[in-house]
Every structure is written in C-alpha cells, then in structure tokens.
Image (cartoon, rainbow, N blue to C red; front, side, top):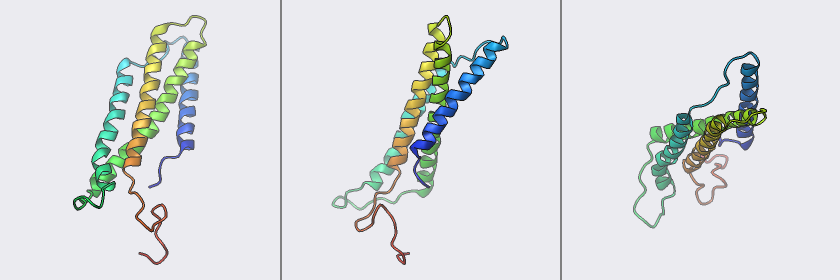
Length: 161
C-alpha cells in the first residue's frame, strides 16, 4: 500500500469545499434551511483523530525497535493492516470533511447578515476534519517499516526474494 499523497488530500479538500458551498447555495435558493453541522460532529472528528495515533503506537514501538535492547516482538499483521487502513481512511475523510466545513464557512461568511452560530459550528467541523486528517497521517507514518541497513527506502534488490 502506498502512502497517502498530498494531491489526493488537496483534491478531496477542494471537492468538499465545492460540494458544500453549492449545496448550501442551492438549499437557500429553493427556500430550504441551510445545512448546519452539529457540534458533536466536530467533537467526534477530534476524538477519532486522537484515537488513530493511539492505535498505531504499539506498531511504532515494534517497528522502531533498538537492536541493542531485548529481542523485537513480532507484529500482528492483521492488527497492523486494520490500523493502517483506518489511518488512511481517517486521513481521506478528514480532508473531505475539513473541506466541507470550509465550504460552509465561506457560504455563511459571504451572506449579507453573518450569524456567528453556524459559522462557529462549521469552523468546529473544519478544525475537527484537519485534526482527523493529521491523526490519520501520523498513524499511517507510524505503521511504516523503516528501511533495513543496506536497503534503499525498503526496496528489495532484484533476485533478493
């Protein structure tokens, strides 16, 4: 599995901004109430963003083992796979939801009358999305195995298998 690219995160962020801005404009134009994210969304995103590195910490301790200490413990591949998939999904979801929060912020800020309630709630969603993305990227980095001595960035030489 490859690491998450910055262009993918930027693309999802911009997609979230565009979709939510257009959705808000459409809802208001047809006379419906605008979408205002609940505060629990931002809190949940922050909570998940903190949990992801906590889940990845045991893997980091094993993969960054110092050889002069005791023998390294084996890594449970199923646990490591679950954590890295959660981390990647968290990073992508965080980018999308932070973009969605910013899209709502831009829509609310461009209105004639700016109300602080929806602006604060959308900012909480955007900050929660950024923290989820950061937690996912940290956890994904911690799940990588460092290159062994003699290897270049973990690439096997031809015929080494």
